[in-house]
Length: 264
Picture 1: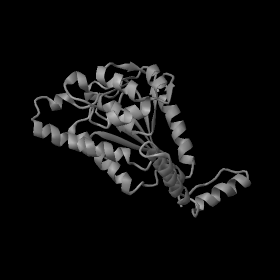
Picture 2 (picture 1 turned 180 degrees about the horizontal axis):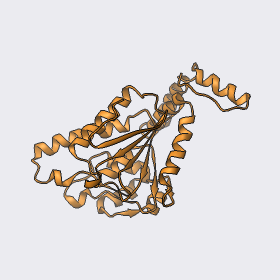
Picture 3 (picture 1 turned 90 degrees about the vertical axis):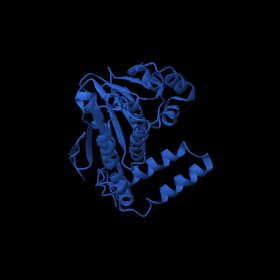
Picture 4 (picture 1 turned 30 degrees about the vertical axis):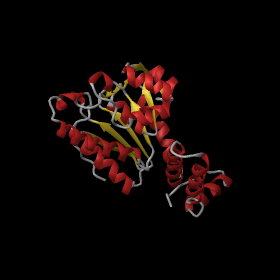
């Protein structure tokens, strides 16, 4: 796994746990062209080879801003052609993250606006600091969400709430985010990373084939009807029956010990 990126900081916290930091602190961790390349490369590689990782935690550099969205300084006076080429890069990066087989948790350490909120919504779930703020402000700038925001937000908060958030562009609080389903938990000051990593370790301790297959099935649940979704679930389930981890999990339960999963 490539560990050096211009706009990303990677730290393998433990054998199976990766901490990914959006690392442009002087630019509010905004999504510029280089970050698009970096994110696309990272998550596309994870689709092919999970590098024995079982969970990824994502946060932003600093303690005020998770990600301010697209870098509008870089975008100022962009030609239509350049804008669309850049956006195609972001599209590929967001899709690659959305398709990542490894569970992804976002630790929202501050403002998550526009593309920053869309990035968060591509993850599996998120915890947030009490001072974190959220908004999809694109309609106030003459554009609209283009990082899967009109697709992922209504799936998280419901279509009527999503319309209010997107059509007004009004920021909302961590408390609202928790109530509406954008956040799973608000963490006390200074405990965001501790609590997020604690949850990530629980995922890492589970059978990695199981978590990957369950994630795939859960993602399909919002795409198709119940009967076909259940058929996909059964296909995903049967993938685990012949695994060593399935035998180990049942054996460990009966022997009253912690299971040691190998991902096989």
